[in-house]
Length: 424
Ligand code: AMP
Ligand code: GLY
Image (cartoon, rainbow, N blue to C red):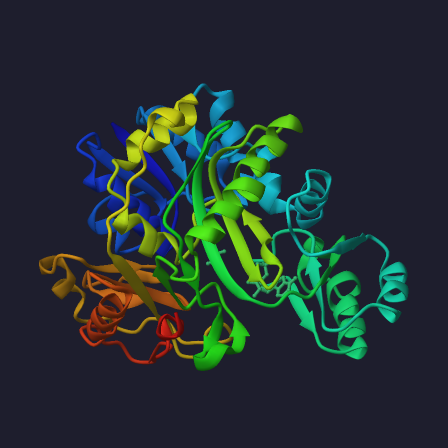
């Protein structure tokens, strides 16, 4: 099979690595990809939002399956563009990707179908939002409705902060048109767990759980980022939690989408909060998490192309999804200063060591090749240093040991990825 992967981050490197393991994969392309992906796939200089060019490339090169890694093209309708030309593509159509693309849509869906989530109100008028906030209980959470690179969420401790937040989101449009509508949500407490799943429109199969670390600094301080590290499985995702979610959340979501005439095929990523009243949905994403994919996919035993084929064909009920009985940890090496200003173009050394070590992965995110063909930094999140271990503690020790193999100027990482494991 010839495969095209759309995206350019660590997640797409993890997807490409899983695809490369499949005996069915003859040739892998990635648009636009990055320097690390370029070691196992042919990178093509087409942007993820250039639908016509992507479709054209897939036709000219007789691509058998295109896998969409990123949220923006999915929400923008890239799957519809491929299907309109009779091309095989993995991911939800536009009318289903709205599950991630609009927080107001997803909240209304959960309310209508009794899927546990935080209480909320939706506003399109800042004056109404301000009026509501006057009597609301603090802290409170404000969310820009649309896609905002994971940054459109404000947790406000006081009424003053909340008022400033309404101005930022709805009036100053800090997150662009994502802030035309705003969800105001009850603040929840508890541990967060990421659960990724494969969905074929009717059947849902859950992957092993994971936990992300979204803040830039140790001790969950600093600004929100795309994710600074992950571990899988989450020891807090117990059999009891799993049973609850299977009963009230997972299948219920797939059935709700189908009932709305928005059949969902692809990945549903459930962002869960394990609250004192039980698990609740924080958010849905319509794609693999980044860096969740980096710790979940290396543990998956199945041929990823078989599973994706089953999602497209509606035969996922015939697949037995299996994960290794071990653990995996990913520590993101970032450019110091991320998620604000940082320098790029720094020489990266030591990545070749990963090629020789089983169970260790150096997933590239913001990297490119310089004129001499050497890796240099090209983004905020640079590499996802990932290692397996028999236990979470062992995987964490292995991953941190491997962070030492790689050097670049202004290398920054959190030193407490997976610290929560010690409390389990
Ligand atoms: P989201 O993009 O909706 O996942 O929100 C980003 C982050 O904000 C989440 O990972 C949580 O840490 C936090 N968050 C979102 N909604 C709530 C909520 N209702 N209560 C508490 N924290 C929240
Ligand atoms: N790691 C969180 C996300 O991919 O949205």
